[in-house]
Amino acid sequence: MKEKGNISINTENILPIIKKWLYSDKDIFLREVISNSIDAITKHKKVVSMDEGQAPDNYRIDVKVNKKNKTITISDNGIGMTADEVKKYINQIAFSGAVDFFEKYKDKSDAQDQIIGHFGLGFYSIYMVAEYAELQTKSYLENEEAVYWKSDGTSGYEIEAGTRKSHGTDLILHINSDKENKDLVNLWKVREILEKYCKFLPIEIYLSEEGAKKDKEEEEKPINNTSPLWLKDPKDCTDEEYKDFYREVFHDFKEPLFWIHLNMDYPVSLRGIVYFPKMTTEYNVMEGQIRLYSNQVYVADNIKEVIPEFLLLLKGVIDCPDLPLNVSRSFLQQDGYSSKIAGHITKKVSDKLKEIHKKEKDEYYKYWDDINVFVKYGCLKEEKFYDRVKNDIVYKDIYGNYHSLEDYKKGLAEKKQKDDVIYYVNDQKKQSQYVEIFKQEDFNAVILDNVLDPHFISFIESKISGTSFESIDSGIKNVMEKEEKVEGFDSVKTYFEELLKEKNVSVELKSLKTSDLSAVITINEYENRMQGMQMLYGVDMPQSNTLVLNIENSAIKNFDNIDQEDKKKDRALYIYQLAMLAAGKLEGDDLRDFLLENNKMLTMKEE
Image 1 (cartoon, rainbow, N blue to C red):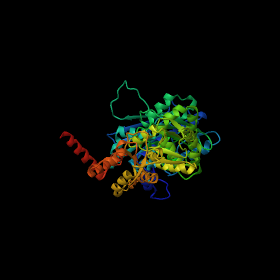
Image 2 (cartoon, rainbow, N blue to C red):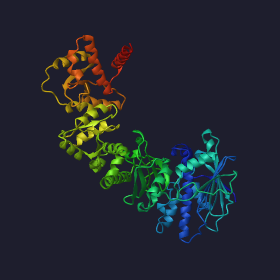
Image 3 (spheres, rainbow, N blue to C red):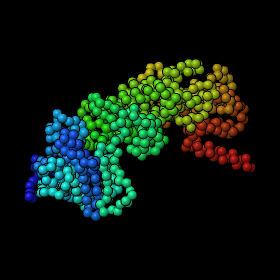
Image 4 (cartoon, rainbow, N blue to C red):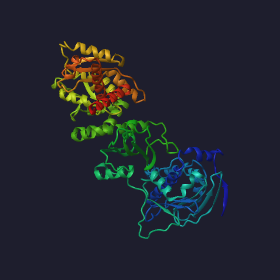
């Protein structure tokens, strides 16, 4: 018997709203209908367990693409629907079948924890891409006939007897002719969507193309992994399984450094794996990805309400059925659970770092060059994280050794080097000369050369009283021994001061153990730090420099013996330019003059 009627809605414009505004991405329609199929199968499993139905040989979902007819068909062998259920759950928007099912079995089942749909709106996401849809469904109840339903997504529908022979549902979507939907009838596009949203759903999903030739020997394989590694007990997982899973999810064939398996039941249910990737460049650590799932359904990447911001530098998957999602399953509602989840994840990460540092100190030091940006960023962003890991922050020195700050300062005292100032290197290439001087003078410094270190240095100074940091090219003058008697050098100093007055360069006299170096440039630490921070924002701040002349060097010792004024001036400028070049600061007119002078010397040698 054929019947026609109107879909029951409260607002005549609600379907256009759902179609255009409820879901952030059009391809979500496939996630929603697949989720409905998963729910239908979950319900059928439950009624079978209650001896109210018979299980098929295997539960499965089939997605078939027909490029010629421009259709996508999603079929399942779940609980199916009667005509009355179709009218109730399909024709009435926002009337979720899950709600009724929970009520019916609330005292007998934990099915609520496994069923995905709660809002009853996901089905209508199909009309973002479908011109019209057909439904063939048959209830698991033996005395119920199959049902056929059809609607174009307006306020009308058709319903009559169907042709399906076994329990379950076929949903046939007739893709509309909109330009942006043209790829949806291609197998590769549907596979891409399924792998994005349905990669880890608990029921096998098979994808095929209707009308395409099949290789008889080709094995039929599901496109999804129904038992993702995060569901296993950590003690049952091998290192190789963790690495394989990392490659499967992130398509990154560099092995992760280590990982954390999250397993939480209270106050919310949460499972997941967070990986610390190996950093190949200074900045790719900023390209982390935390994939969020709810009941194995992909929700979104990098949702900050659940994932602390500094953890977004990592890679991982987190599955939390208790997530307070909105109806589109794309965003979180404001909820106290979110902060609890974030707090738990932060604790587990800090616990893992502490564990490795304590039990595998050498391995921890090997990891440090890759993970230090993450640790420092976490300290800067979250006070609680710093409090947890402050004793696990280590510093690499210019000799390649790693220390806690406390141990490093003890080592300075043994070297008779002041421990209230920590000298640091922020550019190992440009400051190589200064590093060499430090080593010759038996001094030490730490390497702090990543993009966050200017901020981190100030942060640590605010946390640890009596400790300050100074750049190696600022502190180099403190390493040099000052001569108490500088008779014979006052005139040298005065000459350089007059010559360099317009360049904003001051002059000092010091003594170095090595006589090979005529002079070095030192800078003001405050100016250096301000410039380091401002350069992050594209602002260049001019610096004042100090030229430190080494009175042990023959060029300085014999400077006053130069008779010709031109030669004396050229010699002084050359000493200054060499020092600036070694400091990586020679530029503009100074660089031009330096190159011209050197080319002139080459010509003189040829003559």
